[in-house]
Image (cartoon, rainbow, N blue to C red; front, top):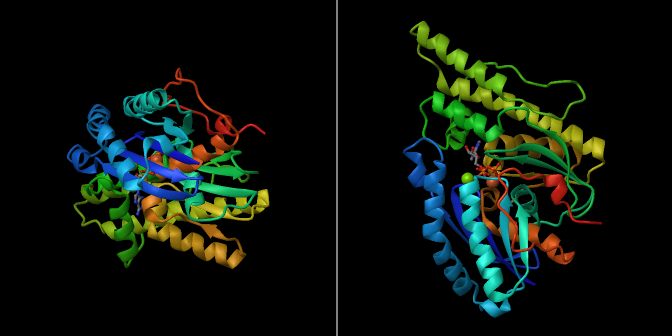
Length: 338
Ligand code: ATP
Ligand code: MG
Ligand code: FE
């Protein structure tokens, strides 16, 4: 089947056409980063307006680039949530209009299911598996018992990991989004400032990054007060080491506890070189296959939404035209019926 998928949950407008949940015919992405960078973060109202400007053009272009006609499509998929409500709404309205005009089924899709199933576009997922979702808004360990079934075994109690990266970067006066800049400083650093790790309760799979962020800010403040030169790269390296230590340790513990056959890494922070290297090393040492999508499929894109929507298509689980954009949406409840 051919699914036309739309993603507008944050600051990327994206339209993709995916065959059978696996084969990308086209995956067009209009990023707004250039617009938001001057504000040091995503401005929701501007994001919505930019989506409106791009969406129709991208849909037309996707059809042309994929070399298909509207009549070939089997369904229209769209990110229903979670995300910025005004941004989501643009995609939802476009998807409903297309579904109605073409008389096609509509598939309301969960953004994080999309990040996880981005792996399906390049790899064969085996079950049971565990996914480590690390993005700008989410940090979660998800157990996948079977295809399309999601059980959250741990999540952040405060900041998402990408959010922590961006806040630390801002404190160091680095441009938005700060993750890649911290990553670069950390990898190049010669020294490391030791920072705490938030393990929480011994059996917990949850995360917390706000204490670590405060520790970073306090190192910066102390240096300022004493008029000392701050070794920014040593601080970045200490921050990154703490984040990676906790993520890798908990992810591998979850893999063993769940009897998982694979560990899936996904979300924008999967671009982090330190995290990829540390996870690859631990997985290799413990004989666990690690699946990571290519970078272009780690950050927001509509192909991953098409991949996740395929699960619902297979089960004939469609939405009505009354479907609404949901800024908060449960991943577990989005699981396919079995
Ligand atoms: P969500 O999917 O939770 O709604 P999002 O879609 O906005 O959030 P993504 O686009 O998946 O998030 O990821 C963006 C985040 O990834 C930003 O916080 C950015 O700083 C971070 N990031 C990107 N590259 C790196 C890197 N190399 N190291 C660390 N963080 C990174
Ligand atoms: Mg983004
Ligand atoms: Fe995302």
